[in-house]
Image 1 (tube, rainbow, N blue to C red):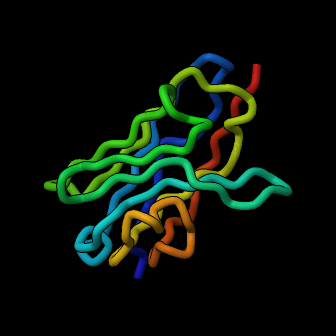
Image 2 (cartoon, rainbow, N blue to C red; image 1 turned 90 degrees about the vertical axis):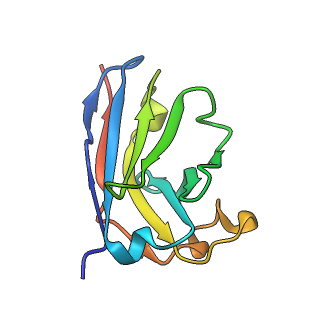
Length: 126
């Protein structure tokens, strides 16, 4: 079963914006946390942002603070990542993830998540 489906990736110019969306299954949306990770060619997967379904507490990697915003729509079981002031260093495949029992200390660790989307490519280039 496909629990997470991302959309919204594409090509953006430096300084531009993109908005990623992630639709979650009933099972994935019943968990505690939703996160976004990214992986550039030749690099390890890294944490970008996370949000709790209950309460909406958010977490960000230092590299994206002030530029990216994660949000969720509980009724639609959707999570979004608004990315502004994009730079070429943001180029990567972006993955949506669902953590069913993720605690705060695990929100930035990929091993704290149970389901993953197929990924959507974001390319920032002039």
